[in-house]
Image 1 (cartoon, one colour):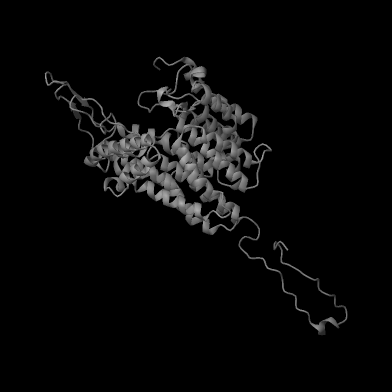
Image 2: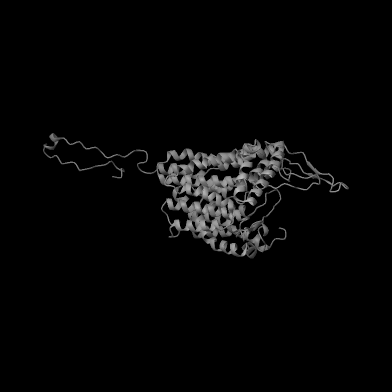
Length: 503
């Protein structure tokens, strides 16, 4: 457990009983959604139980397992609606195949160091990075099951209908409303809540100082992680507004305005850029543009390694564009691209299955010092698991977006179409954020699972509505003067419609 305070570990252990309290005091579906979201938001960072032969169990794992165990006992019918490895989850089989390939192609050790120290007087010792064995196959797969498959599956199982998506939107937006006060406090006094509650800081204090102010973390790993959750809450408000729902009796429009103000003062340039680029699109009366934008972003994500490796991606042009806005931002962006180029060159030596773990994918100087800077999740995944592992893990994110674009044409209800387009764009922008930034929470996979569940459930939900398969038209009544003169003839009504026509 290391030297971290005891209350941080107790918080993880007690989360499962807390989840059972939720299930015992509210409707099972809402309890499951709350257990999942609140666990990710409130539990401590940088704390995990590292058991032998198992991956470390951190806040993400405890949030998912608490939700899953509660749903298994109190809402099994909801879990049974989504079968494992069906639909988009089949991409996880590619992840497993990649794990096998990674272990089998990295049995050799990697020798680093042994070069001259500064001044050329002595030589540093060689360091051996161990190779992978057959035992790493289940280890890698279990890690991916906990970090990728389980959150995706929970999202897919818990949200399949319009009402369930509205409920999750209320949970996300309501949680963010509760976090606004602590967020404003930390923006004023610096990020302190994690230290006050759990006894230690979640991140570097200097890293969270920006433009003469502070970034708020609350209980997230970084200020950007909190800002991305705030952005998701803004999407939730738009969804509630389009569905003509309130947030605990409050119209979602004003709440959205408050959220946007909080994002503007959060010192997170990336999240603000995403908001300006995508929120106006989903707020239009028709959301077809949002659906098309989501597909374009999804294609950008899945083709990003190839475009970077072939220099098709306009990295230099983006740096020049950023220079017009901020020299500091441009320098940071250029630094990231330069490091990615070095890491890509290293990854190209084992491009299909990567280098595996133990730091084998990183760059070292002749003295054996690690000089790599890995910011983006894509380059971490590509370097460690290769093209196959990248295709499996990121394909699980973007495939539901592509499916949603095709499914939306089969749905006639504009409210359901708008819901599908809104969630698609949220998933796409979450995947895009994993190109320059790290994998802070499992929320992107939860969102992708929700979209996959809606892809499967919305069409079925609409098909069950009365009159959905048959166009109900008014019955044409023909007046015959001869019949009108017949004895016992009653005049027809002025208008008459078939059942379910709405007339």
